[in-house]
Image (cartoon, rainbow, N blue to C red):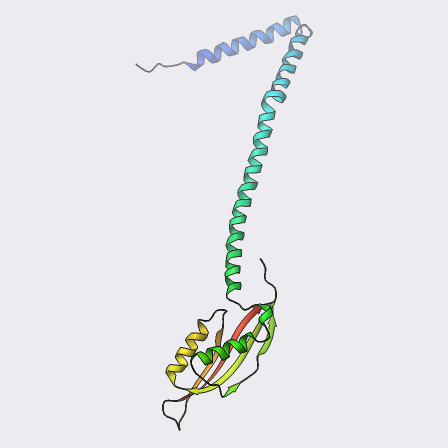
Length: 196
């Protein structure tokens, strides 16, 4: 089937002729004569706009706004759950506030006993509070071989709840071959308030 050429000028001229006919008729007979027709046409146009066109448009606008709000809530909810899970994971790695008084001392003594190490000096726990976290630090000094120091440090750093060796000094003991004087400061953080 061959494409047909459509001449738009024919249709435009026909619409133009009809428009001119209407305008000439109104000029000749007067606008008062067509007042009822214009009034009814206006009422029908208004009824069609407010009764048929506008309600669905309002509903579409309202539903679009609700969909956007739900989408934003969904994205915010996913971000909140990620942050909450990270926070819960962090809390799981830290000691509880109720264990604040003896936890670090007991954990260090248990780690020393696990490797059969005896401290020569054990300083009491010092506390420092910063931004809702209580940082506890304790220092211990002992004499042992390097392999024992290594396993003890691995036990401390891998402990749960979290302990961190913040300072470590190892000095070879001159009068005892294979022995080292070890001074280690161990730290932990305890949150004062846990957000769930």
